[in-house]
Image (cartoon, rainbow, N blue to C red; front, top):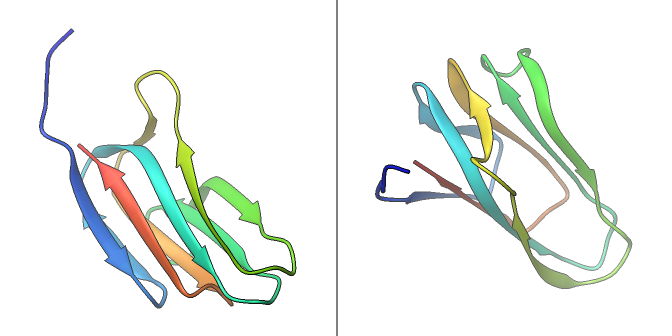
Length: 92
């Protein structure tokens, strides 16, 4: 297995975490005291949904580890954030 450097992008609003082919390896969510939604898309704001998570109506910080080689994004990683404080996406 080839070793690669993992990079991170932090977002507080929806936007592109990385423009290019990559694999998402993990996510850290910070949520305020309301329900939220996180969607990762391949191909911009209207691209294919690769990951989606609805959060509960509580304040928390959560680490999400993606198993195996991660989730492949062929075009880019677009992060759609609804009612979350911040999202950190780890990719290589």
